[in-house]
Length: 325
Image 1 (cartoon, rainbow, N blue to C red):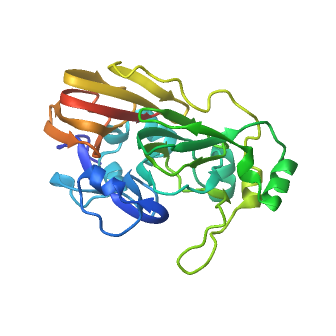
Image 2: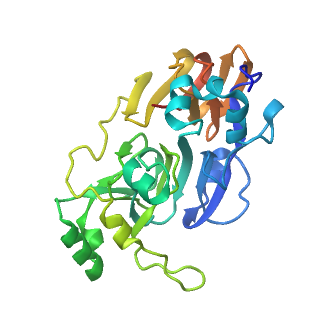
């Protein structure tokens, strides 16, 4: 195992996923060609088996995230993250374009996911990049319910009526701990940062049918034990002033996310305990560090290894930075 990384930050090839509810915004947002219709997701950095991100350029071109970890270990992940997650990359970073409503769903927490799937759970957050008129986010319940009420409403086809509905606008933040029932409404383009897990329990899908006339599988019983049936006051995170330069917008047991506004030059310090993912939401900047300068533009994402704990950024942009915890 090598100790030093020769080139950073590291850029990956996005995995573009065509889905029934996807649209055509992601590729234009990223400034790339659209390979097929209905691109609903761009997996920017992933270690999910079968969809591991591959380095796009430079001396590590063609290597997967896991191969980078095998080669560089602690210098990439950070000592605490290496120890906590057993040498596995713990985050999944995406862009999502909802041309139609996503299914109503829930994700298991770490304990349930480990016992059922030998996997991490799925706590996640959403940063709204752009919206169409009347865009909505569905998160949590209007009133506390019981598992019996849940089953009854599923059987009656009225489950959607239980959901709390929130208007969404660019810059809004929604934190979704595992167990919170949720759905992305049509007209939202957003960034999603989550635990490295692809486990989803689909509860309701508007009785939609695919091109072959089939409805999608529901996971009514699996979801029953995963749902948090209580009502919470913080479904939508407090709005951070748009002119604040550096603000933590989410902090939890799995990751922290900061929003950085750059207008000129900004110097950033990161915890050396974790790697840092930088996603450019708007604008374009130059990331300046001892390994050289790296340009990053709207819709692009890079990985900074843990040993790169500080850098300077020049340009004009809004960035999201994420670290594992």
